[in-house]
Image 1: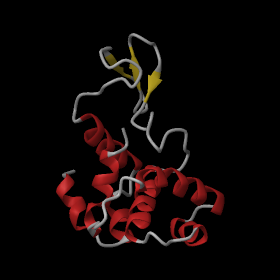
Image 2 (image 1 turned 120 degrees about the vertical axis):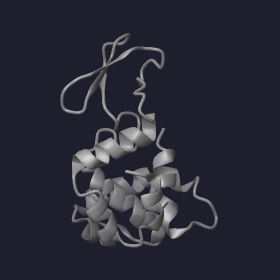
Image 3 (image 1 turned 180 degrees about the horizontal axis):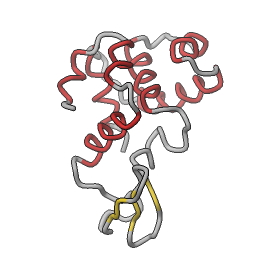
Length: 144
């Protein structure tokens, strides 16, 4: 999937349609994060082995990792598609409260709070004049 596709997203439904499968989200995030060359978050110079279930193993440390490791998605059981929707909603509707976010994403208020809290780390880097379509690509590029 090309990054230019994300420039024209104008609704939450478009995000849902574009990222309806978790595998699509993972492949997109891998391409965005590693640009085809997987790098271990534990040792940048280490060789990386691809394992099953979209996991990788760092040769030098022996640790397993995936595309979520060391990002705002790390340790979360929420699907990447819901995360992408949340990022889009928070970026385009910055005054969205927890209950509204919870309802729009169909998650519990506690989960919505956690997502908004993690996304808030990226909000600090938000430019003064955001454009509607740039949210997902800009924020995903800041994950590392």
